[in-house]
Length: 500
Image (cartoon, rainbow, N blue to C red; front, top):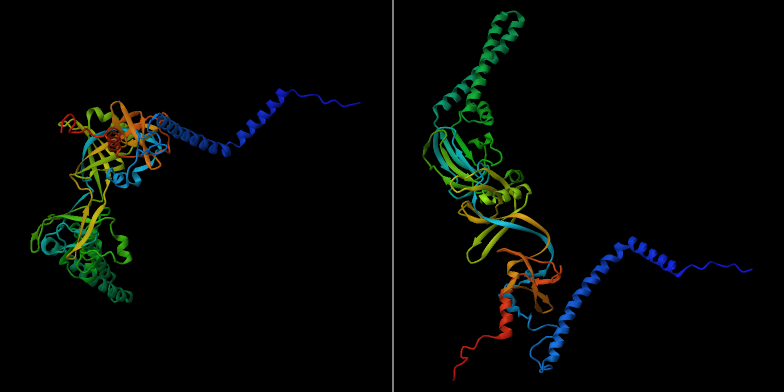
């Protein structure tokens, strides 16, 4: 007896195989999908190049001069392809960094507003004044010099009568207190033996307490005159009156009493040396201060509170933008979204210098009644362009200075995943826009659709005319388009129609 195995229909076999293949593909998609995607893109690119080659071959077959060398290159349509020499590439500015692949990026539609570089209120400018009346005995810094915080600026011989009297009373009280302490010590030993009544010791102790209270008041009076605790303690230790003040450059971030120092306390010399010891290196400010204005000279008598000089810190500045009334709502949106702002500095003969990625600090809370504009402020980190020494003095030049005029590019709308090219990468002829794609040693002209264009960038429609990864020329498109036209038609003969 034979065992009969039921026959499975063929359609169920194929269904089972297809199901297994699909499941296997799902579980292993991360292994085969990237390679397949790359293969598809390469196939499309090869097909496009092949189509251009086929068209070129067809045109060549129809050409009665086919087979003759007219300078044509295989694989290129001479009407839309251009070969540039190394000199020509340099002439149009096509350096290595200006020929690069296309990539998808976020485009920010923006508005441009006028602006000016300004100081940070309360932070950029520091006014150095004398707290006491005196005579300038030495000016250590010169106008325009760069100084570090803690650098000696002025020496002043004190002539303030109230300060002299207060110091005298303070030293006198210290001496009287020493006498009382000695007398109390002597009476304590005698009182214990019963030779002196305790009432006498008690009176001396009361006198000591009065002197101590008077001494505290005199200390406070000296602080009120502008002396620091260290200065008062120095007077107490040495029992000598303060005759001279040394005024040093203050710190932008920490304005302490140590800005005024006794003449006996060592200070850093005016010409700051980068080979300072480790302790001084830790204390130095991140950027030098510029002595912008010097108001006194040696031998000049100054009253308490008089301005000696003005220091400025240009390490960080503000850009003051002027937004018009119709742009206020868009500006507020950019501030709320924390979108970055670009600063455009015009440079005669060298184009524009664009500083990207700046942060909006704040918007003013009122509209200027005269100009009908809203002021807003953008942080501008500064940088030193020149740091030199001359005759023992240090001079620093900053890149950005208050008063410089510029424009701010403020984003108002975002378009993600866009093909964005510089405006100089696109050439226009009539209703057509072209870009130039690198193809070997040639540049092929490719027609594109421009969705949006401003004076800096052009947004290209992602419709298949270009693909991410295609290498294109980022500038010089107009010059290359003119070169193509000249190659195709040549220039007009100025002698045409004349009989020579």
